[in-house]
Image (cartoon, rainbow, N blue to C red; front, side, top):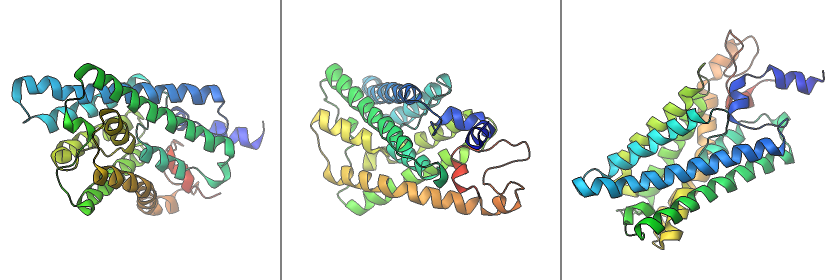
Length: 277
């Protein structure tokens, strides 16, 4: 068996279940991409739709709770139910995972596989926005992630902190022995973030989601959209740096010299990018 195949077989199932690698075929990539498209569509449509249903009984008072709880719960349910697919949902988390790929594994094939997953993510959010518009006529302003503040830097700071936290939670949770923890952790983090900031910034924390709903519903908030996009580009780097710093001591004490390793030889997913070769 070649060294590359030995290396691949020595990885834990959690890495293989969560993301493609250089040993993956385009069929694997397409399967993972379809999972992303379906989850983004389902979460986007039902989370936005939850506000329509709750308003019939409570007005606007439960908007943050209904959207955040629905988003988080659907992320957990769809992630666990589709065990084995990528399940990043947002481009910032996808980017964070890309930057934790070991430099020895970089290839153009792997790069384009990530691009394809990102495109399918965006497609899922556009399908959700289109279906939402078709059902409701788009008469729900906050579905487009419109902010209630005019200060760009306030929106940017909240988006940056929120997206960095989501990326960090995803990367850290993949170190758990039970990979389902990843979905639960990210789902709960998303619920809290959306619930707290829904009435301030629109509670997006996902550039694809903001872009899709604002374009389809034809309701634009330039400050919120740009802030979300710029924050989404910076957040993965901050999360990866934070993650690497947190696991420095653990890596030094590990017999294998790699981050996220444990005595049972169960390695984390994204943390392999910090492995000493």
